[in-house]
Every structure is written in C-alpha cells, then in structure tokens.
Image (cartoon, rainbow, N blue to C red; front, top):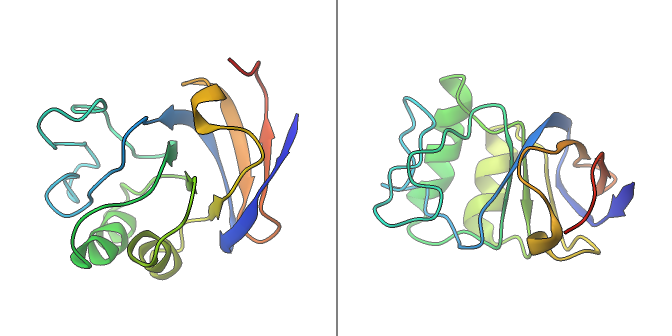
Amino acid sequence: MLIHGRGIAKGQGTGPLLVSPEPISFLSGVDPATGIIVEKGHPLQGECITGKVLAFPYGKGSTVGSYVLYALSQNGHAPAAIINNEAEPIIATGAIIGRIPMIDRIDVPLTCLQNGVHVRVNGESGEMWYNGKLV
C-alpha cells in the first residue's frame, strides 16, 4: 500500500515500524550512545530506535534534540526514517543534519499503523510503502 505525505529530509529508509502515541523528546529522552528511549513513563521506554522507522506525533523539548538526532546518526543508532504528524523545527533539523529520511502529514492516522510492519520511506517524495494492514 502506498501512503502519501510530505517529504522533509531526503533519502530512503526501510525497516520495521515503531509507533508512539506520544511525542518524543530526544534531549534526555533518548540515549544517543545506544538508541534506547530512556524517558521515564514514555510508552516506548526501553525500546531501541536503531534501524526502526520511528513514527510519532511530533517532537518536544529543547533545540538540543536536533543535535541528539545527529549524534544518534554518527553513533550508528539512528532510526532508519522518521514519520511525524507534523514536523517541527527541532526534529526536522535533526533529521536533515543526521541524514535521516523524514516525512510528515501522511494520509492515514499514525494510530492506524502497526508496530513491526516493514515499511520503506522516501523523504524526497513523501511516500511510504506499507506492507501490512491498517488497524
């Protein structure tokens, strides 16, 4: 199934989906050395984002979050791609400087996407190939 959105950061990424119903703060919410979500009480606490297509509504927190995304990329622990409901400057900047493909405004709600489904994201065209059923 082809899902359309808006391209934010160029490149293509493939991997299993990891969907969060809540925003993510990369500053102190994700360990840049391991790619593990460490934010206490977050629905994805303890999950590793390395190589996953990370889908979440939007980013939250400090502008240093952009640098954390860059550090994740440099450390080999970045997500394969990012999908947001609405890209905001912190996450978009981090995706661009970290060379992490990113799209937003997809034409299905993030809550319809299933964890673990293998997808391919094209950050230039804004398209996502989804190989599963929508929930």
